[in-house]
Image (cartoon, rainbow, N blue to C red):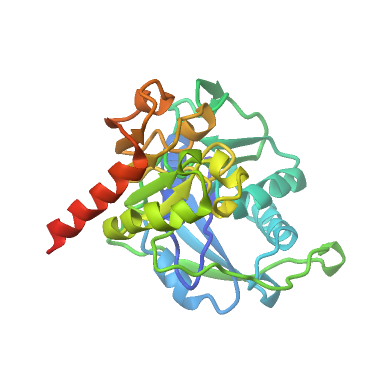
Length: 323
């Protein structure tokens, strides 16, 4: 039996959608391997979180508790999870490919001397995995050999796990940590606060590109549309590199991967790296004055127009619909 252990990342006292995506992928992996799916959360005083996590259909929920895991440093998390895997006999360790998982999961693989696959998008019946390569232009089917394997899941490739009628049993364990191997120290967490939805969890995303010409135009032209739609704001790498907006808004191969119900690309040409981060969106709208822009090849609706005229007009029409 090939049991699966899913690393359940939590934030501000709850589990984000990305965690539930990882759990659903873990459940699918366990079914195809003929094993059980377990979920593990790390921290201290986890009772409420574990009760919530137990609702999503796993065979068991494990809480690894230690005060040093309240602020999860990558070396401590990797050490604690690797020790747990060895202790309970897990075949596959999984997590959604968030910023934290990208830091932690390779460390877990190194500690376990295990092969790793990053950002898989499908699990085949024979246990092989599918992952994109070359900015999504090639899909590779791969196999990982060894008693343990480590896998991260692309956050847009699976649905979020649904609530189950039967809660899973909960087990709390003391995390196994060797202080001599803990080299990282938590200093501070400076969170950017916004009334807008989180980029990776928003139903609607409006992204701006280099066509907006300046950071000021992001504020005066794009932000009103973002707010009227109740959307999250994103940006292309070109806009981030130009200093128009901070890099936490970047959508693409080297930024965040999103798949909202509606994605509006404003002044974005559609470089292959950007398309890799948003082409799974349910509906894509593109506004660009260049009718040959690659973004139109993936758009469901395209508007060839000057964004400085079209976007304010759209914003005004949305205001009229609300009143």
